[in-house]
Length: 354
Image (cartoon, rainbow, N blue to C red; front, side, top):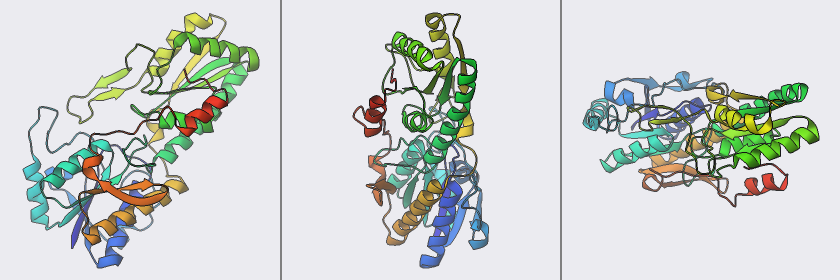
């Protein structure tokens, strides 16, 4: 058995732990030969791979990023861009020449959508969910998310000392795309006074009134804002548009936009500052939780391969590793529900949700 593994989409902490777990479980479980495809699906198109043995994956469980590299603009079915060429045949030829019997694909919703299309072409594929945004359908938690939340919580703690010292309104913008999980959990862990999410459009005047109240009560205010948040009746803040990407819209700038919206409502006597956390949320070593979750996912993926259960994605449900059909995940997203327990707890604490 010859198994290929690739990491697609954005990088995140825990990818190396998955590569390690998949490789070791296959080697020890059935003596499989394992190859790593470099730079995600781009490696399938450019014919780039490397052998993975025990020595190659030793000592990487705690290392951030991905030793195989990744790419988020190489959809073989639209290469490059929405009007690009279908180069999937080139990828299939490469798999055939290499003698790769099955493929383990690690990534987010865009990667799973591509994986599902390969499965429909007859490629034996197993998916592993990866996203700091925690927004994959039918999966309760993705590795990388806990590490991102930890970065947000630490950043809010640091910003609070400045907010308190200067008597300011401090705004922190997080990642998350169209789901508010990072802002919600990071905001709760970091003690934010207000948490603004894509799922709940905010009322600018209501947020301003809340800030005035917090300034009167404690002398400062700390706001955690998801990049996909938007005002009532308003649009998303788009940083740029990348036509060649499977997900062409890049959100960003809502923190600065919110600051400018609040300034005239709070008056010249109130100083406001914003911080764009950006890719700091993706980098660095994975937390212990993410290392363990990534290891669980990697072993579960290897077991699916060994049982010949393809066209499925590993998933966490009820804190148990299971699997779901790739077709049920592709093109779908998991957002914060309006009845989500964490959202209700935040409201009970008096946190402003917009």
